Amino acid sequence: MAVVETVLTTDLLIQARNTARRQKVTSVIVPIATAAALVALWQVGVKGFGVPTYIAPAPSDVAATFVDKFPLLMQNFWPTFFESVAGFVVGNLAAILIAVAFVHSRNVERAFFPIAVFVNTIPILAIAPILVLIFGPGMTAKVVIAALICFFPTLVNMVRGLQAVSPQTLELARILSASKSEVFWKMRLPSSLPFLFSALKISATTCVIGAIVGEWVGADRGLGALIIDATFNFNSPLLYATVLMSSGLSVLLFALVSLTERRIVRW
Amino acid sequence: MESKETLVGQPVATRDLPAAKLSGATVRFGTYTAIEHLDLEIEAGAFYTILGPSGCGKSTLLRLVSDLIPAASGEVCVFGKSTEEARLAREFAFVFQDAALLPWRTALENVELPLEIGRKRNVRIPVGPRNPRELLELVGLKGRENALPHELSGGMRQRVAIARALLCQPKLLLMDEPFGALDEMTRDRLNLQLLEIWRETGTTILFVTHSISEAVFLGQKVIMLSANPGRLREVVDIELPEPREMKLRDTSDFTRHCAYLRELLETC
Image 1 (cartoon, rainbow over the protein chains, first blue to last red):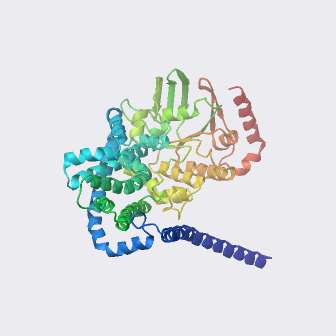
Image 2 (image 1 turned 135 degrees about the vertical axis):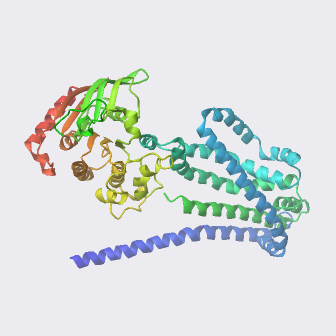
Image 3 (image 1 turned 45 degrees about the vertical axis):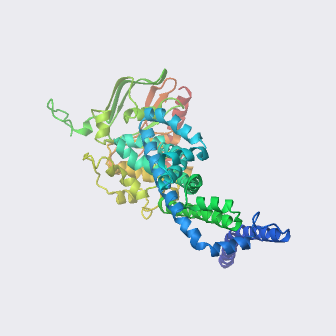
């Protein structure tokens, strides 16, 4: 009896493991296959209907340009990268500090939260020229625009995160006669981390958008400037390659934040 | 220890003092009266369970004793001190209904938390005879020191919370339905474990529950409160053979106590 049961369990285990492996493989293959099929469809469509390259380049044209113009793309990649990362750091740091102030004092929140909401309602495209006028055509304006776009989601999430401590945890803190700063460092700050990382993942992609919009308004370097340049010269393959490059940057930053999150937020 | 004569101004031995003494204590939340004129004396070293219909202020009573909420009028003393002084001296510990563990800390780090609070401010932290590791062993969690709370079952989390509460060797342990969310088998096992801890540490326990059999099984005395507003109904002595064992529940004495409390509860 026992032997039969053992054999049966082992069989079931192997079956379960195989199913799990198959599911894992499927979950990787399906999205890749779908993307590849769409690219193939695009290639066939553009070539088959003879669409002119300046209207819509075929994936093969884009790939060729990507390889040919790689030095040019990289030359414009780095300014955008630095602006995005600097904006990410500045915007999120400001949001975190202001969130701490909000949680610390209801009055500060009452005074400044409406202003934060107001600034957030101004379209980034409208505020970008203003900032370029103030800060000039250099990198500063782009960093500020990228920072601004990161600011609001992090502020809102961080305030929620800092308040996400359960009432019983706060009662525990009181029983232990914890000081305000102990409650902050040992309870509020750690419990805000999952919220903070949700916001950081949003801003990892949006900070690139901020930097590029800043470059549109006035810049001679950067992926944004290259996009404008390629558009006005009807150089569609270069335009597509640049767009690919900028989403690549977003994906890179997003992946970095996700990896950091996985290492820090283990609960 | 028989002699209770002490000179005026000299400290009185703690065990002669009641663990908690409430005189005419009233608690109000706005216009709502949660507890009205409560007189109660908790004898040091005893195991008290608190029963009563919902809304009778069971949890409020614990929160009043532990200085989480103030009394609107009347007086509350813990070992002869004000509740605030007792809190600052860590004379009591609290075990909540949900374990209130910090999810980013391992079981061991959660037990160590009370040592970290106040360390930088040079607060004198009383330390019991057992270190955090030994406490986890005491509650039967040896080997799970590095597990995060989400990797533990509800019963295990509650045991971590108990180990944390025992760290500063409290003379009074306040427990607010600590096993309320657990299944019956886990609850039975933890009840036995808690009795063992109580006998070994000699601490006073105030244990809120809404299970009559749990109240009888654990308590030497059952404090029955009545609702709207919360008042003391009766303190019932539970005279059952010690140490208490599971099979005690099948005896007629046990059933008799339960029946009495059930009847009493219906009139509260």
